[in-house]
Length: 193
Image 1 (cartoon, rainbow, N blue to C red):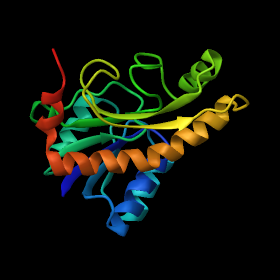
Image 2 (image 1 turned 135 degrees about the vertical axis):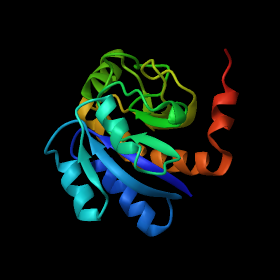
Image 3 (image 1 turned 90 degrees about the horizontal axis):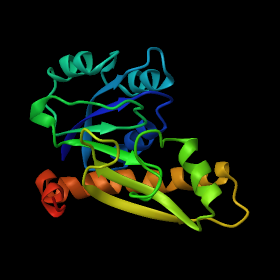
């Protein structure tokens, strides 16, 4: 079972999903701490309601100072909207989810509705999400798991976003369970270069 920190910047929808799945026994993880880089967000209130230690920290150094007090296996970016630099001991243990099938529609500037608008504008018939390890470059770390969704011709960017988020709710826990089963280094060793 993986001990994890959850970093977020907003409403905590992914935190809700993790909490529900941990309680149902379908996510092999324990949330040790929740940290937001945005003060007063709903995600922090939810963390407090669920009984998780919850903190606001404005930058990497403040976040990492908080994390020093916890025994962690992984750090999960759950709607965390800044490039994060972890402590050296956890450098290869940061997991992120991206709302497209990497390597499409990813990298600096591709997040949230920007991704779904680009998918719509390109006329894609498939989109999805990618759970991956994070490194110092946006969306470049080893892929853990991907899940696709069909994009109908008449789907709006909002329709695509809704369908991709539903896939994310399945894919993120699945990816964490795969890391629990295979270990972090398995995924880093799969990539070339």
